[in-house]
Structures are given as structure tokens and as C-alpha cells.
Length: 279
Image (tube, rainbow, N blue to C red):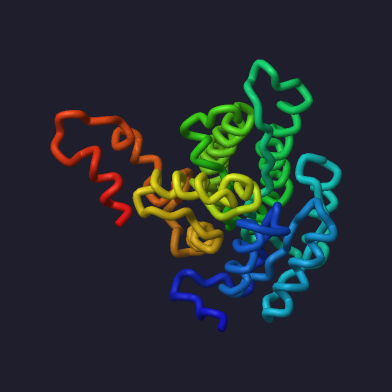
């Protein structure tokens, strides 16, 4: 059953655009925004995946539609912007979620791989913010949320282009907050840690890898897509009306664990506590 929106977390009569919404965090976010009353427009490069997700959410009684779009392509984004304006006349929320990752050491990463990652993960955020943000600026109201990553604050080994692009997405949100805040449009970023999402399926599907990942997170599990979606919904709604230019880490406390991972010989019980916490 759809949960009724709270007094402030209410998106009724709003139009929310979510990129990379064909599955995982994007689909969960679109669903949550629709549950709160928004008409969610899903942008996704894979047409078949888009159609399946839109049908699934419609079957749940949620008001969603889809547009096939490559966020790294300026003309594709412009066409999506025109379609949303034509169908709805407005855009109140933009969630820049589309993202890819290229694995490998930087010295072996070719220019094409670097450009591809930046084009989707950072330039895509800019193109969509510029395009869909125009309607927000016209109305003097709106919220932009960039889905970044904890890798945007702490470098991830063998994913240099990904980390750089996510750091850029965080800074882009801050830049938008500074420039558009006086005109009524807020911008923030969320940085997921380890989540049950398609991008991490290779690691999470391996039991040994999953166990090690869970032990790194203080709450001893990985995140669920709907948990990140809830934070995005907060930032999209008036519940966060004075939150602007922030990056919220949604990681179960993982980013606070660096010192905890160091050995502490001579400190009674310190190194044993990690295993004991798993009980």
C-alpha cells in the first residue's frame, strides 16, 4: 500500500525527472517520488529496460512515464527536456542518477574510457541540470539532487575516472546551490556507499565478498535502494527547504570506519571487537 506523505514530504502536483531510472537506485527513487504524489518521468538509455520498469510501476498504481534518453548526448537531453515541457509544462525535481564505471589502473585507462565516464557521470548531470533547471528557474522553485558516491570523497582503487567524475558531481551540486539558490532552486548531492545495486552485483553476489563488505560497514549490512531513495525524496521535498549545497553520505557509517580498520595491538579487546560485533 502506498504510504501517505508527511506534512512536508509531499510531492503532490510535482513533476520529477529521474535519470538512469531503468533499475536499481534510479527505479527505486522514481517509485518513492511517485508514492509521495509526484508524476515521475524516468529517463533511461535502454529502451527495453525502461519499458519494463514503467510497466511495473504503473501496475503498482504509480504515475510514471518514460523517455529513452542518453544523458551524455546533448541533443538527446534537449529532446527529453522538450518532451517533459510539452507534456507537463514544468519540472520541479531533477535527480541525476545515471552513471557508469570503468575499472582499471589509470596508467592503462585510454582517453575514450575516461571521456565516456565523465560524459555520463558529470557532463550528463550538467546537461540535465541546465536543461530541466530552466523550468525551475522560470518558476523560481525546484530541487536538483545529484547521486554521487562515497568514491567522490575518498578515491576508489582502480576506478580513477569514476571517483573523479563523482567528485565533480558533488561540486556541481554545490555550484548550482550557490548560483541558483538566490533564484529559488536548491541543489544537493547524495553519496551512496555499498548498496544492493546492479553496478555492484559482481561483488555482492559473491558470498565471501559480500561478507567482507558487510563487516566494513558499522551497521553490518549493505544498503537497500529504497533507503537511498528515501534520502533523495527528503531532499526533493519541502522537508529539506533549508538544505542547500550539501553532500549527504548514505553509507551505514562506512566512511567513519578508517581508523577502526587499523590494527591496535596492546589495546585490550580492540582487535577482537570487530569479530564480536558480528555476533
